[in-house]
Image (cartoon, rainbow, N blue to C red; front, side, top):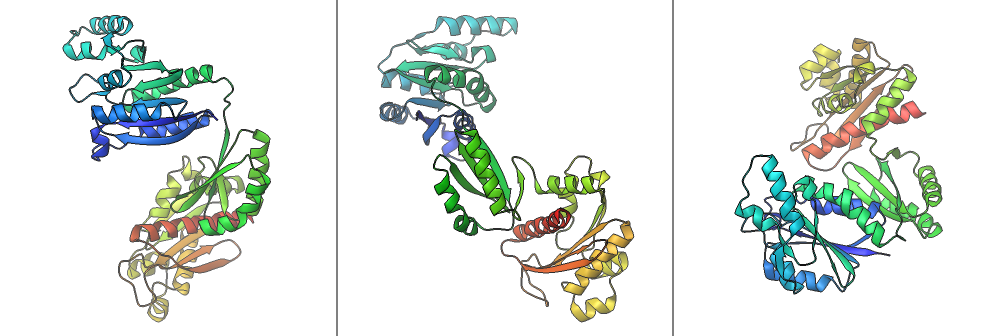
Length: 405
């Protein structure tokens, strides 16, 4: 397998001033093209460190990709460090110089010292990205391609996708793209997944699988060079976790619920207490939500539950606002008021303080349908934000399961 290393250069990365998205973009793009990323490093704008990392990496990997430190300012030190590490003289690159001069002239700008600096490259370097007004270059050293890309994310991505990937494919024509599929699960833990998945991994030795927590979901990423293997394995996994897998790829849970509601011609309304409108927000993120979402009520106080949803005062006094009867009345109340097919209601304690009916994380979710009203009690854990998100997702998942049944 052809493997490479990504080296991100920049003091601003190490100091936490700028979020490193370049390593993510490079790794994702190249892995999808079939190239293995064996290691990623982030280092500062230090010439000695850059030289040492370069010398260490060349014997170990088939290709290297550096980003950052190629600009016109004093803290851009990559070019000089590379030249010294590889014992290559620095010289003005005619192609880069000519193109940059021409570009600046068309823009009515002067050719400054900083521009001059960006045209000085190690001998043998081939400019990359000058068509995009970016300063990058490629070197072949010991028969290995070394790519030095700008740190500006949009410039880096453009050169990576339009130049580097095709160049690597030309150098390593036997490398083929891997097929990938993302399965999205909810309502199951990683340990529960692990208990069931081992046999599938034994059956398909070519299959690479990653389990990625993406709160409150878990994403299973399947990769293999064989498309048929991917489809067979994915089908087995879907059958294994049929209740928990709600979507593939970029499908969100609200989108899946929306599609089911539209397909069955049903409408939804929500009554939210502890989530404060979060469920309504998630569902209305789906384009065209007015076709299936009628209205949402944020009935946070006890009085709002009584006045808006018709929850009897006696129920709240006897059972409390966080209880099975209150959730039932809330769900039935919003369904009746909105004249919809499904009413979803949530009430509970998100924290940090508990209540008389239970500890933090105590949640009741009610779902009223044309035939029956169902209420479930949950004991969630986490921060206030996490409990609210878990409640919203669980409510939507209850609707999904009902519509699939």
